[in-house]
Image 1 (cartoon, rainbow, N blue to C red):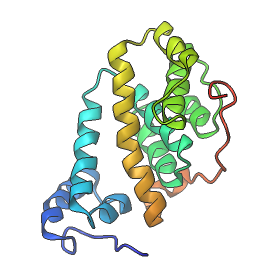
Image 2 (image 1 turned 60 degrees about the vertical axis):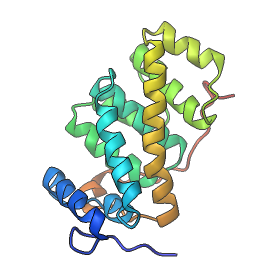
Image 3 (image 1 turned 180 degrees about the horizontal axis):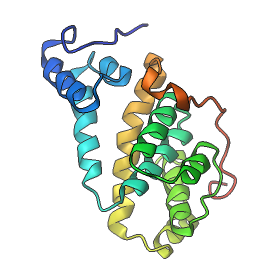
Length: 191
């Protein structure tokens, strides 16, 4: 099954304005959004959750850690590449992004606890280990942020699964960050 990648002129009527706004914001319509436009409710939901996730108490760096950890766990090549570029635009340190892309520990203990927790939540479908949760809270995160991680994982799962099902082609804007490494099991927290 193939899905067309829509533009603001070819999309279903109730997705056109949403794609036009995305084009204004990003300077182009990412293939993910053009594909999601086939189901306007999915497109609207995804972009709404993106905005809501940006309003959480997590910093931009922490948000990108959640999104990259979930994308790694779900093996989403499109989202790993896209969020590598987005993380760079949000000034996430390159060594943090490299750790996420390679499933390696982040040197900062607090950020590492977040990476492990987000990965564990995704990997275990909302049933993280008690050890992972305790490490996350001991690192200085709050019970509210536990739920904010759930929001980020849910938001990213929409795009990860869409990309898997539709085989979304990577945009040229993200091509310098191609990620093809096979998913590895996280031996540190998910056993």
